[in-house]
Length: 615
Image 1 (cartoon, helix red, strand yellow):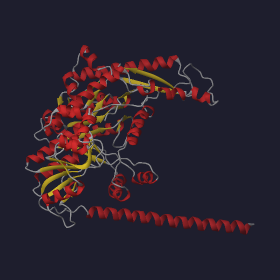
Image 2 (spheres, rainbow, N blue to C red):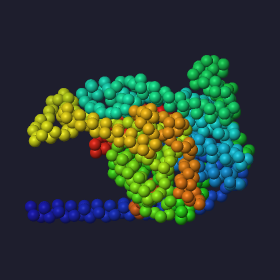
Image 3 (cartoon, rainbow, N blue to C red):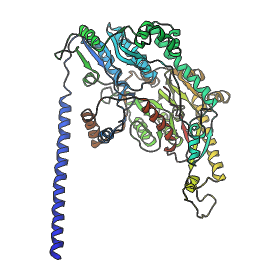
Image 4 (tube, rainbow, N blue to C red):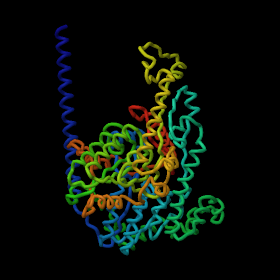
């Protein structure tokens, strides 16, 4: 028996040593592979040879963003391998602008070819920024060409900046107007016997409607119609002016396309050509031939071009640490939901923002700060923590200017209100001055399954916010009073920061949402313009002699830098570059938006958040 135990022990020791050796071999291979990727990546940074008269292929991929999220390539690859869609790629707006503006001065680049087939979401403001860069490119006597099989509404808006728009003879230009639709769960929650206790202030604060109603309220429909109409008018005005067609043509196309298609016997491409949306119908082969005549043929038999990423890797980047002089405007990006604690890029963490604002305050080279906000808000507590830190920065004599992106509403406006100046696009969505709280309890759900919660405590409030038990009237009253106090605090912040009296405040609060142009007339926004203009204004407020600017970002340790570098190099090898934007993905996006109601973690359960998506 002793010999048997000894034999088993020796076998286990041998197995352990074998596993250890195997593990070391695997990790060494992975480490060597990582080094190889780094070496290849560094070697690939050499200057790319560009043939004179070449085209710049502006093949942007994924959503256009202010700051990229960090994604794990291995879990991403695993998800896609088992049938789940991976997260979409992202392209930095500033990278797009840098590429176009540099190419405008590059004598080797004669034209830009817009390839938007893999481009995801971009807001009107972002596309206008890109469009302005394209106009600058064209002013140098260079040509912009758009050539697609199909144009989505966003893609067509950007294509309208081109000198020539080509469409596949079997293609379509999709113009449908703007809409804001949500999924509503009141009946579903009743069937599941989930009791949602809702607290809110703001007649137009509609974030909680999906759990309290089965349809959009008349108040929400009224306010949504106002900003949707304003944004659509901006879209139509821009497109018709650049394409030299009448607004009535677009109105007819979006409202009565069936009657128009009768004239072309159902041919959508011919219809787009006939009414002036596109210049020519060309097959892929015909587009290739046209571009080859324009740029000449490469050694591969294609037209001469350099891709977006190739060109980007060989040009200086704007607002990057170390590329500007000592005196600078600091740029801090606040993108995503506002949540307490430290959070990764793509989410606004209160502690993360505190460190960034503190870094700006301590750096004597930073004379002013531009806070680039793209957020629908989130936690009231986290928003207030950030607002307080902004005030500390201003006390140090450093002006803070807000540049609003696509969206700066609710909590996004909370942190913007008490700054020196607010800039927004005409199409920015802002306001939504209101607060809500939502607490689900599951006592009826559990009882339906034969599960019950019972016990005893020293006070009436001993069970607190126990989601297995009903909320007491005392707690309900306390939460509602807290919500009302938070709303009054929000109003005080806006009144003080924007110098708005109480009478005027009533017309801009109550949860209302406005487009940027309307917000300016109401005093919620000071100036209309983009990030560059906000930077210039911040420099002027700080009496700077230059408009040098640079991003202020979280410090990364070596392992984080290595991870990000490894991801950027290995991702193209693991993953397809095709991103699908389907009706199913849109449904999942709506579900994700609604589910955010359940996962915020404000310490007091108070939220200043606006959740409606539009398309």
